Length: 431
Image (cartoon, rainbow, N blue to C red; front, side, top):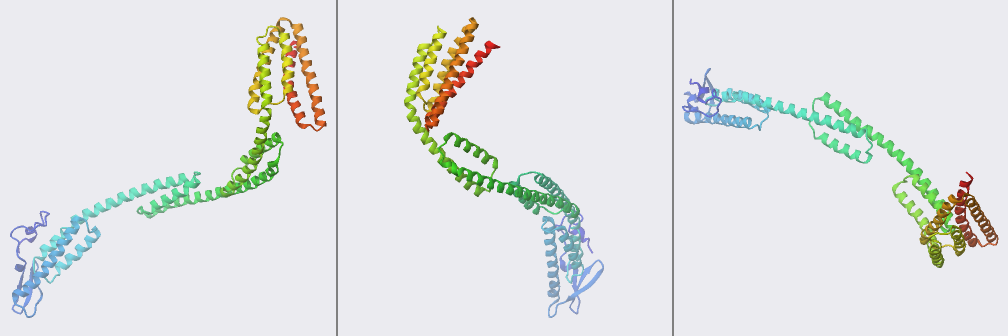
C-alpha cells in the first residue's frame, strides 16, 4: 500500500491533498458473490453487499459512504481551525469520527482519512491551552473587579450617603451579576464581604432614618407649640414687645429642626401667615405714624440747620453751650420723627454735641477749676431736666395719656445718654 499520510501531506502539517492521490475505488474490490471489500494495512475486510447491482454500482455505493466521511472530516477541520467548535466538543467529535472511520463500511483510503482527523489533535490541544489561558485571565480580571467592588461596597457601608448609597449598591450588585464566577472559595469569600457590607449599610441607614423620624416628630410637636403661642400675638398692637416675642419664636423655630417634609411646609406657611398678619399691621401703623411725624422732621431739621450755623465754629464755649442747651430744649419739645430720618437726625445732633463737648474739654484743660464747675453744672442741668421729664411722664401716664408718656420717655433716654457723657467728664476732674 502506498504511504497515504504522505500522499495527503499530513507529515508536512497540511490538509490539502497532494499529487498522485489514489482514487477511493482503488482501495476496494467486489467478489464474485457481490461482496464488497475495503483494503487496509491490516488486510481486506468486507463492508457489505448491494443487492441487484453490478460490481461497479456496488463499489460506487460504498465509495459514496467514504465521500460522506470525507465531508465530515473537512467540516471538523474547518470548525477546529476557525474555533467555532470548543476544544472539548472538537476532541469528542474527533474521537468518535476516528472510530467511525476505522469501522466504516465504506471504500476509500480510510487510514489516511483517520490520520487527517488524528492530525487535528495538536491544534485542538493548542486551542484548549489558549482557551484555558483566556479563562484564567478572565477569572483574574473578574477576581480583581470583584475585589474592587468589595472595596467600594465597604467604603459606602462606612459612609453616610444614605440617599445615594442605596443606588450605588444596586449598581454594584448588577455589575457583580454580570461577572463570571471564579473558584468557589474565593468567590464565596468576596460575596460574603460584599453582602456583609450591604447589610451593614442597610442596618445603619435604617437606624439613621429611625432617628431622623424621631427628631422630625419632635420638631413637629415643637413647631405646633410655637404656632399655638404665635396665634394670640397676630392682633397685638404692642409693636416693640410683640416684635421681640416673634423674634424669640423664630429662633425657637430654627432650633427645632425639620418636621416631616409635607408637614413642615404646611406648618411654616401657617406660622409665616401669623407673622405676616402682625408685621403687616405694624408696618401700616408705623407708616401712618411716620407720615404724622413728617412735620416734626422738618422742624427738627430746621432747628439743626440754625443751631449748626449759630454754634459752629465755636469761639466762646459758654455761649456755645448755652445755645446748645437752648437748641436741645426746643429740639426735644418737637417730638418724634419718621423712622427713615431718625438715624440721620440723631447723628447730626450727636456730631454737634461732640463738637461742643470737644471745645469744652479743650477749655477744661486750660482752666481746670472752672471746667470742673461747668461739668458739674452740666450734670446738674441734665439731671434736673431728666427729673423734670420723668415727672412729666409719670403725670401723663397717670392721666392715661400713654402716647404722651412714651414721647417724654424718649426725651429722657436722650438726656440720660448726655448725662452719662457729662458725668464721665466730671469724673475725669475728680480722678
